[in-house]
Length: 297
Image 1 (cartoon, rainbow, N blue to C red):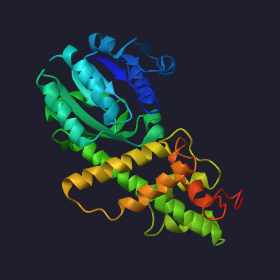
Image 2: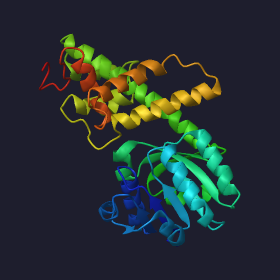
Image 3: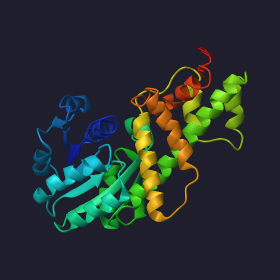
């Protein structure tokens, strides 16, 4: 492949994405605060983010949020030019994204926001969904690269539209997980067989991503470790609340979902996978565990 790629952020998602890109034959160099992650991803390590500017035409960012993305982009901006494209795979605030888009446009650099969904498992298998915002022609040119780790690349509109779609999706993801966790704890405490409860839910109107893909594993004791942490889920929910406040949309549902993940953080589950929110709810409901082999602790 002729396109040279740089990746800043080689963590849970970035490392997997970088590995997919390298396996597809692209020349890719990566930077992470933990230098060992480049080796784990099977790519060449850069000593600094600035080193990537000279080594790459397309610069991918896989960072926690806008508070990290902004200083990175602003620091690199003076070294970027018309030969570069920046793609932000992070879950960023749309207002920050559009501001950075304007900044880079002054240097003839295209910034594409590219929210990703599907989690670590989909990153591993190259089946992510990517929601993009920015110049349509630039997105089209990026499709072969994005296709190394995604099966769907949807252009949502102008700068910020991709990150807006990502926050809307993540809010529904959080709501589904928090509500299903609550229902599973209640079902367990009511003495129901949770395997049978899931069978009913998944063939009824209560079906959602959590009932289909998370809890069939959780009730068997597999929390699907390695995915989005509770604290990152909480961060996304707070970004959603800020977004809808800016849009003038009244949210009556965000508060309860946010409170659920705040509870998980307070009880020490914040740095564990977000699925552990069910254990936090179980803790405050009499020591309930939905794992069929554990039950009440």
